[in-house]
Image (cartoon, rainbow, N blue to C red; front, side, top):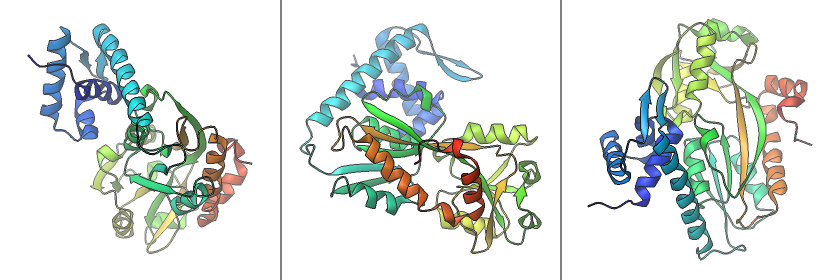
Length: 316
C-alpha cells in the first residue's frame, strides 16, 4: 500500500495553483500521465475526489480544500525546517532569484551593498522564481504577476510591488506601423506573434484577454524564451510584446500600445529568515535604483513614467 509523500502534497498544491493538471505537470517537470497517476494515488489514500474538472479548470472539492490546506501547512513547515538547518547562516551568502530583466547587473551590484556575497538564480518564468522563494532556496526575488499567483501562500515573505509596467510592442523597422508613435493592439490582429513557450508565459490569460478586448485571438506562431532569437524574428516581420524599457535598434522599433491595454505588476520579495531579514525596505530601494537605471533606454517609456506616478508610488 503506497504512503502519502511530500511529492504528492506538492502535486496537489501545484494543481490547485495552476488550475490545470497539464500546466501543473509542466511546472513540476513531469508528464501529464505521471502527475495524473500521483493525483489518483492521493485520492485513493484520502478516500475521495480532490478536484472537479470544469470549463474553468480544476476546482478543489470540499475534501480537496481540506487536503490542500494541510498540504500547504506541511510544505511550508518543511521549507522552514530546511531553511533553518542549512549550513549558511544569516551572515552567509544572499541568494537572489529573478526572471530575465534588463537591470539584472544593476540589481546584483546594489544588493552587494547589503551583503558582499550575492549569488543569483535566473529562471525563465515567475512561477519558478516563487517556487525557489517558497522553498527557501533564494532569499530575495524579483518576478512578475502570473496566473495563479493570488493562490500562493507566501508565509514568512515580505512582498512589495515595485512598479506597474505598461506593455510595449516590438515591430520590424520596415513595418508600416513603425511610423506611428503609438499602435492600437487591434492593428496587430493579422500578425504572427513571438511569445515565450506556454509554460514560461505567466500572464498568458491576461494577454489573451487584452487581445480579446481588442477583437481578435493572437496568432501565436513562434515560441522562444531567448531574447536575441525573438528580436530576429521581429526584425523579419513578426511582432511581440516588449518590456517597457526595451531599446529600439537592430532592425526593430519599440512602440507604446495606445490606451495601455496590458499592464504587468512587478514584485520584490524578501524572506524574513534571510541574511537581510528586517531590511526589506533596503532591498526594495536596491531594486528601485536598478529599475531607474534602464528608464532612459526607451524615451517614450520615460515620458509615460514621468506622467504616471501612480504606476510607481513607492519610488522616491
